[in-house]
Length: 200
Image (cartoon, rainbow, N blue to C red):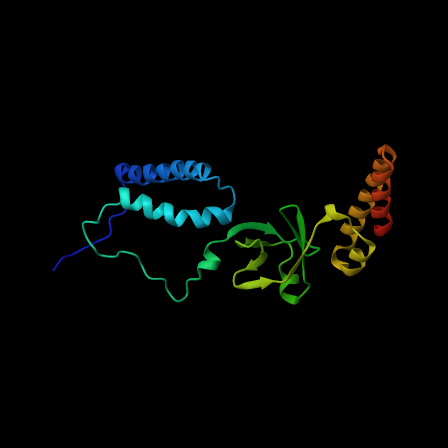
């Protein structure tokens, strides 16, 4: 009976082999993509399968043992939740957080009201969705980009954020009014005037 055990890459030599392989792949793959005129993610995804097969046929070595040391995925492990970008934010008294140039408005509910002034976790998924979580609780949120212009309706719809949004709206309108006097072309002026009228 052959006994096998997992050998971790805890030595400089083992780590060096991994790093050299990664460096070789990154260097070769970039040059191959350039030679084939590929500049899109879709094109790279189609090309990479053939590149891997060719690379392995030339450089792969058979393992000394056929034992598979990979650990199977456990029932409670969710890879979608593991492979997310996570950051901590403090939930304001107005039930908002700032993340990636957006204000996220948290729906007022008993659970959210108890969390005001406390840390919450921002989860950004691979497809760009942003979720707010505390433990196993997901908070319902609405993204709001103040750079797009605050309307009066936005203030009316968000009573917890009314004061903050009103201040942002006043600042934006004042800034755009000043900008209007500096614009030189009639087309730019009309575009900005239309934007101002829509937000008044």
